[in-house]
Image (cartoon, rainbow, N blue to C red; front, top):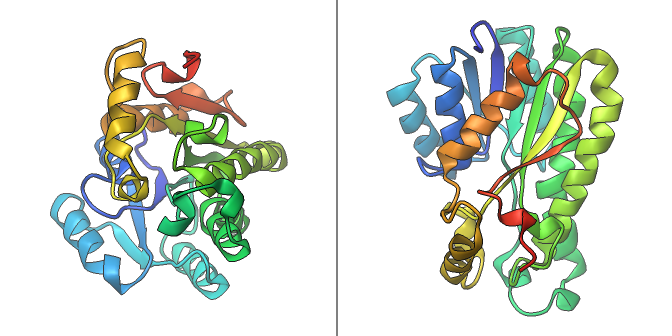
Length: 254
């Protein structure tokens, strides 16, 4: 399904990461993959995972808050591959203290940091990698329903995700003439490393599971299958869209 495609996966932190589930699905579909890591703290973890299951994949540093590292990533990919068919952006960050208490108490610095890492980074990466997507391709990012509805203790991250979704639409319009599709997957709440920063997250999971039409929580593998659809040719007419992979929770009134 993806044989002959070169795809970058950003955001693998451990084996429970959504990005890792997506990478495994892409690998099984025949894609050639490159992985990025933020800094030395994550390098060993990413290398162990990738070298065990997908030896020969590229593993490259990229702190998306640093323009030089973004430029270096693009240069290295151009040197190694020359052509790119897509990337997965599974990156988000906000300070833990900005997720507690009132959204009204968000600091200026915390607001800017959350938007820089969680939303602007999609624009910054697309800006540098789209010139290599000369055959068209797919850009995917990950969002959450807190962008559209108030989720307790999600606060500034919900606002950053709303910005991310707006960026998806504008990028889709900009890059569409080059046959580059840009979409977001809105996953249901999952037990990932980033979710640990959300207060009372387990209580949120219980409430969602009880109210989803499918009466279960989405899994990382469910999200990965959705990403595979959005990257493969079967979704060639889909762009600028937020596709929900949350077992239907988003349709419920409460």
